[in-house]
Amino acid sequence: MTAPRLELREITKQYPAVLANDRVSLTVAPGEIHAVLGENGAGKSTLMKVVYGAVRPDGGEVLFDGRPVRIRGPHEARALGVAMVFQHFSLFDTLSVAENVWLGLPPGQSLADTSRRIREKAAEYGQEIDPERPVHTLSVGERQRVEIVRALLVEPRLLILDEPTSVLMPQAVERLFVTLRRLAATGCSILYISHKLDEIRALCHRCTVLRGGRVTGVVDPTQETNASLSRLMIGAEPPQVTPGPPRAGELALALRGLSLPRTDRFGMDLHEVSLDLRAGEILGVAGVSGNGQQELLAALSGEDPRSPPGALSLFGVDVGRQSPARRRALGLHFVPEERIGRGAVPTLSLAQNLLLTRRDSVRAGGWIARGALAAQARAVIERFGVKAAGPQAAARSLSGGNLQKFIVGREVDAQPRVLIVAQPTWGVDVGASAQIRGALLALRDAGCAVLVVSEELDELFELADRLMVISRGRLSPPVARADATVALIGEWMSGLWPGAPAARTEEASS
Image (cartoon, rainbow, N blue to C red; front, side, top):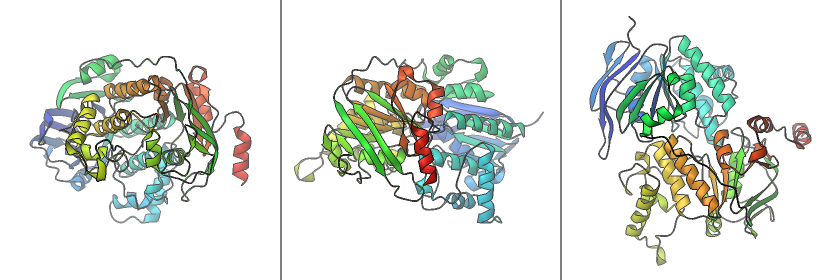
């Protein structure tokens, strides 16, 4: 019989505050797509980092192609044929896409050859990637594509994917699945981490479920339901999110014909962008990554204070040239899509990260009431079920999903009058996703105006009272959720809404 491609025996990893992996065993056959499922903080990412050599286990054994191996670093993992796409990207912002990929390839290839191979590999699953673009100009979704293509270029024998579709559109997900099935058919084994149960059931051959660092089951996902997988993962079915009818009130946020040129040559110009957001409603904005979402969010949050007079108002106050702090004083809070680096400072504690957007614990003269700050952080941790060692835990010590819960919780707990949130449930398990969505709906019901920018259509259809689409820097007209369909929104994502073709022709000729 063929030896397993990967076998983990009794892997244990203890951190000071948590037992991340508790005698975990797992076997992956050649050509198998094997899912690793678990709630945030269950130990999935730690286990994958053990396989990739980024984390040294405290106990247990790793076998590759039937031979015991001791993987002492990612370079040794790559020599074995292991490639990994991390949930938190490992790209250098100041380098181009091609330079980032080139650094991870074996010596002997030119940068020009690397650029050509990037384009060819991206084209295999229908993605456009410009190898010359600096990484700092890419959106989260575009960075995800780069990470996936970089991993595929090394022709891996074992490919580890940690939340690979968290910021990909449904069409891109299907194309990725075609690529993964083709890879598996050549004998490449794939370890697939995802919180999306439908994806696991559609793609994977087997599934190992973790809870609290231990294996709770190994199942054939095609024979399971979302409910049965949820029970294995979190011990119960996730709560159902059932939005009630909206009660739209006063005009909270208004954009009137906002046009802004891009700030760098790889950005997207905004063209005549208009929207109304009212208290007591959730407005969803859909779109393929890189179509102006970053520019729109920067203009709304105050990171880009170039809006002309009269173009952007908050409760009737012209705020287009105001700072983020001034907008927060008027009740506007913001959750960015990049949680590490913008949503949170990784080296600071959770309590200290509250100070990025909250001033409740700052006293006269700038003194910080440390006890009050810690209590505030502890309240967010408890309310949103964040798995952390406590208020003094560094942000980088949290799993991606738990950090996302803390960042969203920080802004929800501030009782905003307007909340703008990008990718609210990126990399979050089904239970936490339901909790975050429930918190956004509760804010809406309390009279907050909520703007959700997301590439998850299911999320937008579950949350939004009205939907808009952003394409090539333009916003579509709004459509009520009851009148919207996935087919309609998908068509609009190509810029094909009523009145848009003329604008697109004009843009193409300019």
